[in-house]
Image 1 (cartoon, rainbow, N blue to C red):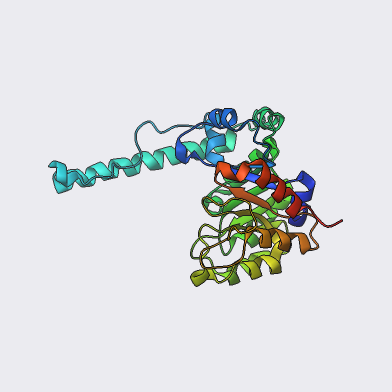
Image 2: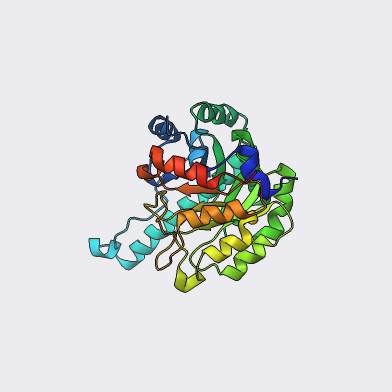
Length: 296
């Protein structure tokens, strides 16, 4: 069984980069742009991977336009029919994708994973935003896909029942299932995940962690460092000794890395950014590696 505390050391992961489909760019464009960045782990959204292996695309738009049809002269009944057509299209596409996921061969993704690794950009994390709401067959597919590209962490949104319910899935595929907090997730809920016995972990999203909502972040990291798989730094964060982790708090990136280093866990968690190029300067990388190296 994969011990989530050993994920970092097994893959020598220190510095990560998160890429999402929000920009509309395919994986191939990301690969060309990121060559030479020397990233230790890529956190990739599963939708980008599915696009790469030709997942079904909707036959028509599935999201209504962000305008009021009544303003364009539609009658109320016509507006209702229009929205029903979008809902039907979305449901049809969802059903097609579900069927595709249960039958698609993920083996070709092995070559994709090797291409990225040879470029110095190994996949370390596959993010599946709503895994808890997928069918059992789809959840199995998501883990098989992660393994195919060489990732050892499957990250998904926080779910109170998720860690206990999905832990057997993680054991079966020898992956670490990591739950990402949102703005409403409490410290108590995250601590319960950290206390779970099994291949589950916490992924801290500091972009939505606030001192008012969750309190200071460093005490949580110090208490649960061995059960944190990775950390999403706030937008624009970069590595230096004074960069704070969250607003209205004195804890810095250096404090966080020191907390990971002091723990008995063999390696620090992955630290993931959304791609601020300042994060990848030679000096910041040197600081990061030296600060996050584990104690002999």
